[in-house]
Image 1 (cartoon, helix red, strand yellow):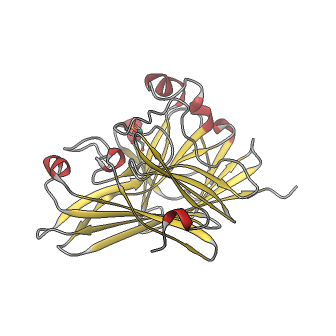
Image 2 (cartoon, rainbow, N blue to C red):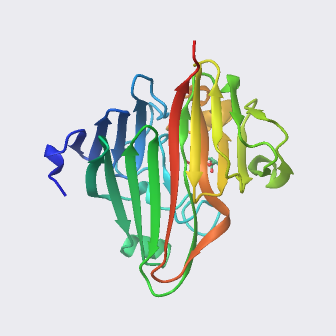
Length: 290
Ligand code: TA6
């Protein structure tokens, strides 16, 4: 592996909460924090920010960052351990980097330690690889490094930046069974070809698989998400009251975000000793031709 400082398109800045890495290549610029392996920005070349990070996000090296792409592992929840698991607030380690076809990439690793085993008694290695390609590609790999099987749920809890969520349509979910978390988990089948956000939304679309297009009418842009290995999709917006209840989100910011999360929730992933699972999410932006 070449020295990070001399690799074109990659910069790592030391901060009190760990290193912050910038990938700046021909296809766009991404920012990823060692804290949580948390991506907080993706600016596709010639376009505007595609990821929402709250201006009140706590960057203290302990809290989960409000916005960006929290890595949810080993539990989406609700469940016996910390909500959304511990990976998003753990210090990952910048483990590898390089460029491929001109696109810079980094890999961050997290392994079990006393603190994680106190919460979840398993040995694992997690790796998040971030590639600033034509699409921002996030690959999460989980390996069972212990000698007993374990099961986990997880997600790439992606906060998309939109100009006005009330004018967004989400395509690609029609006909998919969903669990409405705001209705006690009641299930129904999505009827809309373009799902509109008209109030608080918190849904798990089970076995969605297809590509998702977030048509952001007010911005004149479509954000496209494709995933492999993550069968489910979570759609979430806290709306007015929900945003007010967060002290790390500004009251009006609910309008500028929509979470569309590649997830493995409905059927936990079981890994035998030595086995590895991986999932990838790609995010690309497309402008409507004028
Ligand atoms: O992914 C949707 C969700 O699980 C919601 O239920 C909502 O609470 C959100 O995530 C944010 O969770 P957080 O723990 O980051 O406040």
